Image 1 (cartoon, rainbow, N blue to C red):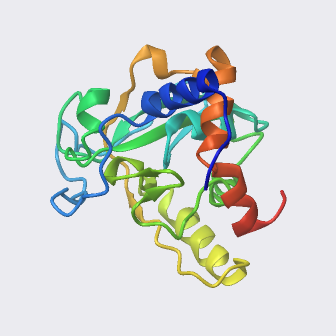
Image 2 (cartoon, rainbow, N blue to C red):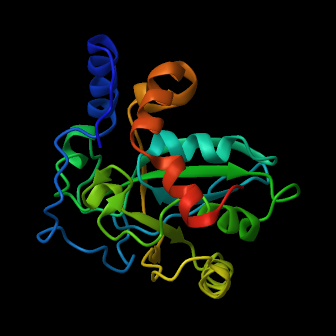
Amino acid sequence: MKHYLTASVTVFLTLSFYACAPAQSAETTDVPTAPVATAISGPQAPFKNTRTDGLEEMIIAGGCFWCTESDFEKLPGVREAVSGYTGGTLDNPKYKQVGTNRTGHFEAVKVTYDPNVVSYRELVDHYWKTVDPTDARGQFCDKGASYRSAIFVTPEQRDDAEGSLAQIKETKPFSDAIVTPILPAVTFYDAEDYHQDYYKKNSLRYKYYRNGCGRDKRLEKLWGKT
């Protein structure tokens, strides 16, 4: 598809794409799959909510984490959405390392929410409408292991996540199979500061990226207008 953009806008859009997807590659055959969370420490240690303020946490991956942050922070009851990395084999990964698509990490978001306002099940139900769960190679224009969709669950969250998945398989308005996995929640590493709240701090560039990536058009095609 040809996009008739001015030279300056084309450069601006290209920079936006590069900012979210450096060194991406669709070649993911040598990327390790996430093992069962049995480690005591390190990248495969089970994730635990250590908050003492009554708030809960969930980890999800939906492609570019800027977009997932935006899609969840607007929800009532959500206090914060933090961009980061999870599911891989490298301790303390950095953005450029994850962007090679060879560390096994997902671009992910840790959502902190008030369970008195919104439930975990409601958040998972919302999650499906923010991703393309039929794409095993990535999300929208971003392809590669780090852009895959996934729900990362603690043992307490698994039943609700699997219940939501079963329901969406029955009610989805499209014929393609859902391939988004439910995986054990393991260590979550915060992404670099410049990625946090990117959609707020760089709103114009974010809007160009999201529109150019075709995210909302694909979501509407899959789920209809929401």
